[in-house]
Every structure is written in C-alpha cells, then in structure tokens.
Length: 95
Length: 496
Image (cartoon, rainbow over all chains, first blue to last red; front, side, top):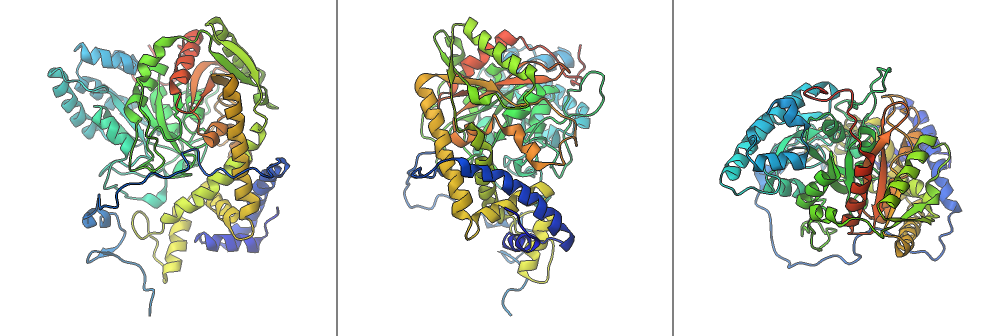
C-alpha cells in the first residue's frame, strides 16, 4: 500500500499533527514501507473468525450508579497550561 | 554494612536483613540514593526522589522497630515514569507531558507504598513506551550498564522499560515496575541480565498508568531474581474496581509457589520460534534451557504455534490503532505542553507537532490511517481476527503443555543508534514477546547465559492465564541451573 503525500497530509490533519511540507515525502515512504510489511496478514485465512478486542472477560462489570469521586476542581485545573476562574481556557472558538 | 555490601544484596536478602536489624531502612535507602547519583551517566532516572525516599524509609523503620513490618518495608525500588505518582512529575518520556504532576496515585504504586516500599525515583523509558531500545525518550537515551568487552560503544538497555532494567542491573534500584505492551518488560530484562515478568492481562491494574495500547498494556515487576519478582508481584497484583479490565480473582502467595518443583511439568517447545537469522548461540542456549528443565524432571514437548509469524504485524496494527485513540487526549488543554495558535485547531496541531517525537508521530499517523474510513475492516478488523487465531494457538498448546520455553529476544543489546534507521528492523526485536501480549497470557524473561561477545541473554517462559505460579517456578529452575552470576561493566558501589 503506497501512501502519497496528499494522503499523509490528510492523515496528519485527522490526527491533529502539523507537518511541514518537507516532512511529507519521507513520512510517506516510511509509512508505506510499514504498511507493505503488515500486508502479510492477508495470507492468514480468517473467514468466519471473530475479531478479538481484548483478553479480558467480554462482559464489563457493573456497579451502582453513584458518585464516588469529584469535588477536586483545583487539583485538576492545577495541571492546565491556562486556566481562569475555574475553567480551562482555549483560543476563541465562537465569534 | 558498607554501601557496596548493601547494594550487593537482592530484594529477598535485603528484606531479611531489615527484619534481623542488620541495617536500617534509612541506611539501605541512603546507600541506594548514592547509587542513583553514581549511576547518573546511564540516564536511567528522569526524576530521582531522594528526600521522598528517606522519608518513606523513616516510616518503614518505625514499623520495623515496632515489629509491624509490611511485606516490602524499607525496600528501595524504582518506578517507570509511566505510572502516575501523586504530586511527583510524571512524563511518560514525552515533551508533551511537560510539568505534569498527577493529582492522584496509580493503583499499582499505591499498593507498593501500602506494602512499605520506598520510591527512589521515576525511571526513563521510550516515549509513551513506544520503542525497543529506550532511544525515543524526550529525556535522552538510557545506557545499558553492560558493555562488550573490548568495545567501548554504549549499548541500549532495550525498551521500553529500559531505565528500570538499567537501574536494577547497575544496582541503582533493588527492583522496579515496568510495563509491557509488546515486550517492554521482558526484552530489556534480557538485554540487561535481570528478571522481568509480564503478568496475565488483568492481574495488575492499569489505573493511573499512562495508556499506550489499552488491550495490550500490562504493568509488571522487574528484579534481580525470580524470587524478587515473585515478591514484587504479590504486592502489585489484585483486583481494582477502578480498572474495568482488572480481574476479580484471588492473588496467590507467589513466593511460596516457588517451593513446588517442576517434576512432571510438560514444557512446550514451539517450532515456529526458530526464526531465520537468529544467532546459533541463542538457539544453543534455548536447547540448554530445555535440558535444564528436563534434568529437573520436566518433560519437553514439541508444539506448534502456527500463527506466530503473523503476531508482529497484527500487533502493530492493533497497538497503533489503540495508541492513536489514547493519545488524542494530549491537546494542550488540560495538562502538559501547549503551543499557542490563532485558532483552537492550530493550537492542537502545533502542540502535538512539538510535543510528540518522531516515533510517536509515526505510530499515531499509522494508527489514524488504519482506523480511517475505508480501511478499518482491511487493517484493524483483520488484525483482530488474527489475534483470535493467535489466542487459539496458545489455548490449544495449553491443552498439552503447562508452560512454553522460548528465547526472549532474537538478539543481544545493540549499540545506541545502530538500528534507528529502519523502524521494521527495530520492531523485529519483539518477535518472541508480542504473542503473549496479544493472548494476554503471563510470560517471564530470566537471564540464562552470556553471548560470545559477553552480553546477557534471556530465556522466556510463557504460561496459562492467571498461572504466574508455574511460570515463576519454571523460571526459578532455569535461574538456578544457569547460575548467572555475571556483573555488568558498571555497577554502583564497584564490582568487587
């Protein structure tokens, strides 16, 4: 599977990672090589085989729907690069 | 006791020495704080915490004096910097977590402190645990304390738990935590001549461990001996309601499990693990391991794990898909690095471009691609189906055998920079370790010998889910037979 520069640029925008124009070509080559290598999976016969998402028990445990944590706003905001008046702050989204 | 004599004790010996009051937890911890400082050129620690360690040691000494010792009281250990430690810098080896001081403690470290252990510091790792050489850390590569005799090039410690492995091998920690997503405990253990155990998926809680690939991430212990690792696992394991994949099963006494012997144990030897290009000496050591187990009364059985060759590509699709999803949280809003932009979108993109290193970016991009519209079935679902077949391989094998013996890695430690040019060549390091992550079964690496050029080689024992006891018992037999007493070129306190 050969990826071209446009595809890499598209993936990078989906992944929210800014890439410089000069990075696209080498990355396209690297990613293509890795994808070529995983192509060998197509040799494996998997028709009728269910996908496995986890080695853990398939059913999630349940618990009472009760508040067990919280009230720690200051501790949580303490790690924010920017916080004001009890909120995380980001560049303006709505004009 | 002198510092070098204290540092030469293993965990079980140190525990017994503390109980017999031959030395205090403060003395032991002070010796280790000095060792951490002496080992600084290895770059094994990102954040040493010597003051914190002494305070914990003093608390342990009070309990020891009252005869109320906890299982790990006064034992100085290192914590891979992927475990959140309350109010102590936690980096995951990444620039993007700059300045992150978690407001809570991971379950596994909390259990270790409740057992009386002393934290020496946070150890270096590949960025977000993505690597097999500990060369992708924002905080620089870790050096293996081992060198090839007559060759002065610094070697990698393996990865991603390379800082933990190097610290233990250099006597700059008695034991350590690691995490293993594709071999990240076992491969560095093999490269550094120590013991590393990846427990069963669900045995040790993942809560508070920075996520790489959630269905494959396994926290586990690393130490100098199989017994030390058994003691550590006893403190780390157990059900945690705050990790929905944590298994609600009782934790046995792993140290006691070592007493059982292995007479009559059936040990599988998978023919698919004879890979092209594996050095003869690794093949020879593997055969030696078979003989050691046979001499102790085990019965070797040739088995087949036919899907082995597909484990690595399936692993990379699943791990990278999960990673791209898990790492979406690093957006410059709630913690860590932010690079300002004119819009929210631009802030995200600039933050993630600056915050992630080359290998992490590569993996997030591939993960994003294999999950994207039109490719999900061909890559991700296909890999998950192959994962089912790999798990079935193990299930079938464990109908006939009690555990499986293989080499841990197809190579010894290589020089820093030697393999960085080719991602796939680097990925091949994990060919023997990845299958156990996909199946979720326990596996250990135990040092078994030296290569021709004087570097440690490990053997791997894989067991049934939740049967760490058999894995540990068989590993101890290998350990005893191998008599691995070699020391690396550098150990804190000196080699004598």
